[in-house]
Amino acid sequence: MGDEPLLEVRDLVVEVDTGKTVLPVIDGVSFILAKGRTLGIVGESGCGKSMTALAVMQLLPPGFRIASGEIRFCGEDLARVGERRLRALRGNDMSMIFQEPMTSLNPVYTVGDQIGETLRLHQRLGAAAARQRTIELLRSVHIPAAERRVDDYPHQLSGGMRQRVMIAMALACRPKLIIADEPTTALDVTVQAQIFRLLEELREETGTAIILITHDVGAVAEMADEVAVFYAGKRAEFGPVDTVLSRAAHPYTRGLMASTPRLRLGPAAAGAEPALKEIAGVVPPLGEFEPGCRFSPRCPLADLRCRDVPPPEETVDRDHSALCWKTGLELVA
Image (cartoon, rainbow, N blue to C red; front, top):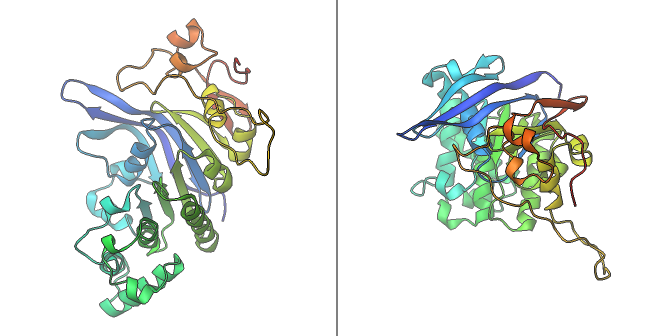
């Protein structure tokens, strides 16, 4: 593992054509991911996390397009290469674990056929070799009785097993980059912990870089090296995970952390644990952003300047920055 850039996203702008107007979905997002590192991307639903991942994979839905910016993977700008080249990269050098495996796995093919297809296409393995390798992959993600499960259909597996199949498929060709988009959605906490542990083990063994997209600040604290906090299509804060989570500079980041439950160990006296706080309001819909800071309608520190003038990206510390006029000020109780 080194610090050589594997993925560089610079000033990415993604737009959607609603038929009546064109609206920015991702607005000027930048980040760098080095080989063997994990970047956590956190934020509420509708903040642009998954859309950024789909832009990196060049899998944007109809009506969405990259308007400007660069997405460089191993120095190659993915926004400017052809579909044939993208097909060669996807699944081989870069893979994505989607939120809900039942919508990503084909119900009429066995899980072995679906994993094996990746191996046959990218690794040029024959049917027998692909099957054997598929069984090994299922074992590596701790699916019991892999020799039997390889012939199962998705509906015959539990939610946790289906997610492990998706991870096995993503890892089939030992990619340089894995994007895990809410990889533990709807799974119980025990299975969540197992899957996060599995991703961490695989990163250490293979040197694969990971982008972990999640609502779970605790998962980011456990797994990530750097964290990017997204709000309303912009990167609100970025930096080393320990620095950001211990000295969060943006009011939105501090709001997310204040609303995260912490495990209570042993008996506690009444009132010993502070109540969870919520961030007032909701993420604004597309096209209804404030002219200044997009978080200002929900921010306890906001003033007229915040609402009227776009905030600068302030450097808080080395490699730590926040998009805020009030960087470092204490939140109002």
